[in-house]
Image (tube, rainbow, N blue to C red; front, side, top):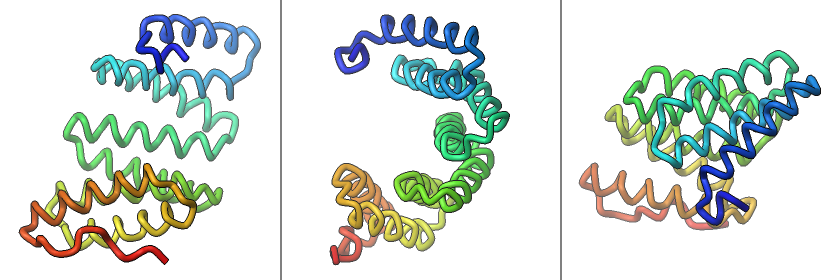
Length: 177
């Protein structure tokens, strides 16, 4: 609720309290989740650099307890961090790991979001055909589950891809089934 109302400082304080409680209880899963949430607050505040240690701690906790699904989510967050830092190679590696985990655990939402991130990275690295294919894959998953927001994000990327590449054809992707 605090984040929805723009109370980032309050949310940060509550997350820090929650982390302390989860540490006291030895609840690594709760701690990992809240560490990732706190990293999101730092990102919202524009303090992207402070995300890295929080996400690394969350990833270590997830790996320690074998929480593969959350590990994939955190890897996606780390990919976004490295993309912000203009470190495409690191972002690429994180996305590849996240995609493998998403497919392993059957998390289609994570798979679609990761495909979108990979499409962005491919576009940045001058591979528009690969980016287009990845967008189409992500779009199909979002449409399969009726995720209109995800669909909109991919279509925005597709539109930018078409403009950037000089192809002003149909940027809507394949038609819905």
